[in-house]
Amino acid sequence: MIQTHEGVRGMKGRDFLSMTDLNSAELTQLLETATELKAQTKSGQPHHRLAGKTLALVFEKPSLRTRLSFDVGMFQLGGRAFYLSPQEVGLGKREAVRDVARVIGSMTDAIVARVNRHSDVEELAQFSPVPIINGLSDLEHPCQVLADLLTIKERFGQLAGLKMAYIGDGNNMAHSLILGAALSKLNITIIAPPDYRPSEKIVAQAREIAAGHSTIEVLSDPVLGVRGADIIYTDVWASMGQEEEAEERRVIFAAYQVNDNLLEYMRPDALVLHCLPAHRGDEITEAVLESKQSSVFQQAENRLHAQKALLVHLLS
Image (cartoon, rainbow, N blue to C red; front, side):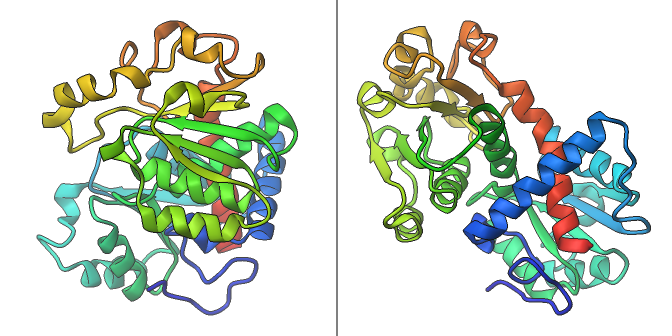
């Protein structure tokens, strides 16, 4: 259950746990804000829209982009972020999730939670008096998708009508991409081995959102899936917590590598994306990652601008 807090305008409640906490109009508005904030950052124009605000970062998993984007973002917006390590919090172990939510929520203006279990971020939202942002869970990674959509829009000038091919594990990243594509009227094809497809429930939910506007497909054939695509997106084959499966997955996913041969079936100006960290030689080759078609590092930078836009929409 998503907790709704009073006094907020422009978004559904005060929490951002899933892409579905936005509607299409809100997503468009958020991306426009991100574009504006990025321009102000590049021109050196101060934009202290959250002066005096505080943000707690409660992380159970390591992070580079998520932590840095929110930390630097709050600084540039005139606020301040406070990182709380797993050892300090012990979410659900040292201290009950609901107690953590109420304590941290009594001292800060919002909480970013990067957790192992999606149920924990939902419980934080249920008991926190301040907004909860899902910085990654086993079900979704919505903050990453905000940056992804911003990157695609910068490249093509639009989202609606484009075709994205996501190839690899039907994981939390795939789930948020499916929902984000549906909200932005972007056609998406998920290409994954039969036993590694995304949640049928999320696919059905995305198709309901996309009805009449765009298509959501799930295939196992890489060539068929990427044919004519404008964007190809991939992620690691073994995520954090799946290290013991890495060798087995390397065999299963071998035919799902993003390489020069696969790109031949796509549009000539196709955009290459990866949420990072990348395992060069596994899910993507060095040549493709460093190619002119790759906007992977622009995509990484856009985490900052997208997360700033999210904070502004939630807290200003």
